[in-house]
Image 1 (cartoon, rainbow, N blue to C red):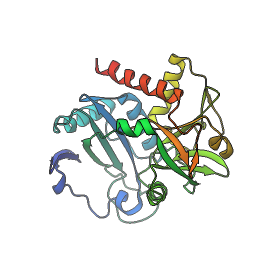
Image 2: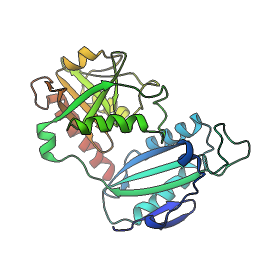
Image 3: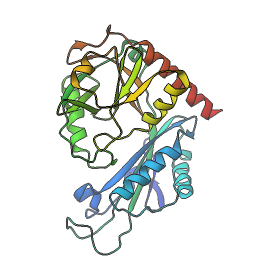
Length: 285
């Protein structure tokens, strides 16, 4: 669609006509949160988990939730219905609202700005999945509340740019020698058939796929452990995986030019990817 319809503050409007005041605190300070939900066959995937994370992020920075769950679902459905693609990626953006510029929260009650748009969902190609992807490593230089899905994404933007400048798919980050996450993905390692991931704390965003992959491991008999993972363990892993809404599960075959495992997508990746597709199909049924 050349000019898709989006939702902004109570109205559906063409994207080219959507406007916010320059004093919106999201524009001035990045004072807001966001959420991204994949749509398969015009159905939201794990919507309750995504909305729960949105609600947690709003609460963490004291933005009053402007809608209850059913209202959110109705608004999102309106945006989905306005687009022809069966598979979409819905983006939800909530800021504290408009106020005179000042760093502290305004004393007066504000009306949060709510913006929702969607685009066709583009997943990695079969060829990319078959070959696996290269990554680069870097020091994690972001703030200490990565569990909040904040619209203040400059650290993630710079990490993604680092990956782009190296001609790779992702930048895998380490804080003081410990694995955290990539610029827009959770990171997993496999050793001797066991899947491992960093703990769900303030140093990573708990991706919705994190919980899903835990569930898939339990159902498929894959041992799983959440713990601190040292940098050297990542490079010595049998497999390294990325997960996100747009990547689903994706195998990493090299980091900084160093081969991971045997340099090919491994058996745990293949089992998890097949289980992920089955979970999608089960929801669509």
